[in-house]
Image (cartoon, rainbow, N blue to C red; front, side, top):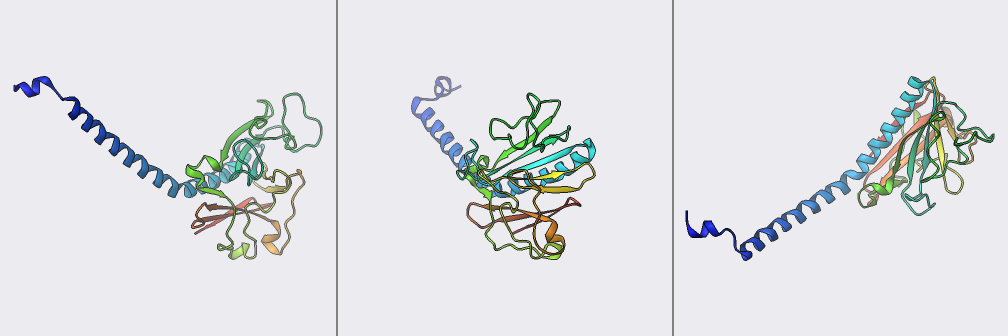
Length: 235
């Protein structure tokens, strides 16, 4: 064994190795972040699509009402107009979440549901199944919205693209309520049943939209009640 191998690395050699490792780590992180920004909108659309499917399936399976509550422009502190929006999936076993009467102690109502703090029903009332803020996707790469470049055809032809066609109030919000038989109804910000205008399927449908921060990618969702049918488009 040589005397050089016995003494190990010099400080200079060790510094060079650490510098190389640092450069490689920085390049890997930058590559990962760019990939995350590109895939963020697709991931958000897949998450929302999954939530719509989960809500309908859970309502039928659990024989409960399941609320998908949409806030199209809040941040993760619940401040209206300051973020990219969020959605919350709430299972309502007692079917009283939408009631206007005073709730029992510890119970939530749609009227008192307030992100990020007051979002968890009591265990005997139901459960918060999921909560997603669009700002959590890398570099806020996706938000609720629509560019108007993607339009509906087929049974939903004429349905206006929208971040949330049934969302009203301040903060803007709305909900899709799936029932035990798989049907659905739309609810506006005040908790009133929302009745769309238009002919045919459009008259019974609500529209949701997601758009990437660069405007290059867009995803539309249509929910038709009373059937609870969900359709989607993307570009």
